[in-house]
Length: 530
Ligand SMILES: Nc1nc2c(ncn2[C@@H]2O[C@H](COP(=O)(O)OP(=O)(O)OP(=O)(O)O)[C@@H](O)[C@H]2O)c(=O)[nH]1
Image (tube, rainbow, N blue to C red):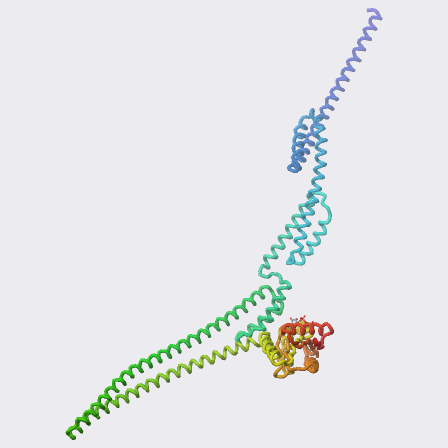
């Protein structure tokens, strides 16, 4: 074989070997690339799966908030299953992003609204005064926290839970204290008024201790239950008294009725007896007349004296008989009459005793109705009667008439510092002193609380100031001692004289205005409206 040919063959072989090596290298590279591609695909599929899972969870978490967002997320989930369609999902992703943004804004607005709502509720809860103090503090703290805005729904939910807790606590407290309602200032006022009212009512001796207890309860730390119970007890006592009064008057009327029935029966019997007696007496009278006539005739027609004697004896004996029967009848009649009168007298006596005791009772009642039970001075009703009477005298006899109204100064301080019962005793002492400082023709009444009214007839203009200042000084000089403390109690007095053609009410108003002036000018003084 020629050398050139051989060389060429050798060359070709070398080329072919190189080519084979290159092909094999390429094959290896291709295989490696294929493996790498497969790895990338697996990795991508894994990530896509995770992404789809994420989107699935995200769409579930957002579900129900916004329908459009729900649909879009569902569509996206569907598209994501197919890698080839992922590009198609891009516009949807943009859309979803827009929706998510607007949903965020919407959520924030809603959260703000809800926060305002919670604030409104908490303000209402704060108005519940009966909540325990500890809870009230917690509520105040919670309200401060509500001042900060929410960033997520998760901040909102615990707040709602807390609010529900507050409600639960308040309800628990309310129900636990169902029997112990809160006492308000007007309840305390009502209790005081009730205590003052029962002081004006006269109760029976056996009821007084109970009334004292009720009064103390009413003037102490009252609860609503105590107040209601006191009302109920007072009402029962009053009803009991009314029922008693009713029974007493009924008993009296029944007794009166019985007595009248007996008297009527006696009168009827006496009348019937009288009629019968009258008849009998009439018969006897006739008989007697007949006997006398017979005797007359016998005397006229008599021839034989001895015969006449016999016959006259007979006539006289029957005449005597008739007369004694008549006498017996009259005696019987008189006995019956005496008996009737006696039994009638007894009945009338017992009836008059009954009436007297009833009259006394009535009088007592009348007296009680006109007396102030605490001070034993005349009360307002008695004052009105007396005012009318004095006014009539004043108009008729043209005598001067003064009305003075006096009020104890700062009396509330005595009650507040030394207790209500000390206040009561002070009123009693002052009432007595007022009464003792007046003449019999003058009159003082307790007008109400710590106010007294004086009616002063026949006092001249020159003397009125002297008289009233004497009364004022007298009270001022009473050596009151409370809790070992010397206390001076003073009076303010306003007075007015009833003028010509003036009504009592007008004069009263002027006296009241004068009292007001005395108070305003510093108290412990007399002001006379001239
Ligand atoms: N203890 C007692 N206090 C009474 C009675 N009636 C009224 N009071 C009290 O009298 C007080 C009257 O008080 P105020 O009207 O404020 O007058 P004040 O304290 O006297 O003061 P001035 O009249 O302005 O000087 C009140 O505290 C009443 O509760 C009563 O029968 N007994």
